[in-house]
Length: 192
Image (cartoon, rainbow, N blue to C red; front, side, top):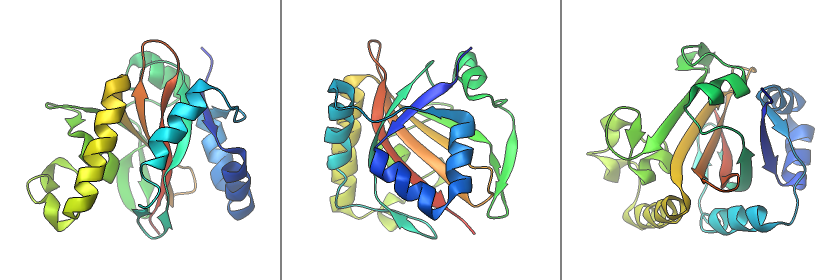
């Protein structure tokens, strides 16, 4: 089986390479890079990411949301884990905290699912009732708008992949479409 492919803007990739070549090597270990092309998928991913242009994902660093295109099997399926080359039960420490090496959550209710705004914001099930403590009302409305846009395109997934450096997690939020690759956005979380 071939690897999943990840397309992010070439300038973003170059900037990440300059700042942290080990991080990019880790991304490339699990997600084969594909150059950015100005096609319909890239334009759709950009349209989605542009909705978040005034927000940052906060951790030990603040970073924006960037368009991405992900090609491969549907997230969370056995074929997905085979393509990414990670056992779904594998664990890894990031910033000293034990995590699933790769965690896939879908939009909805039930096991392994969360509301769309929680997938984007990173809120866990334990924080949903008190979301106002973590997300301001204006941001929640925006995150709801983005999740509706993603859900209108296909099944919405959040993919949280621990980089091999023990400090970063790669976060992808995408709409998996029946026709065409998944589109959405990419960001990073740093915990040191």
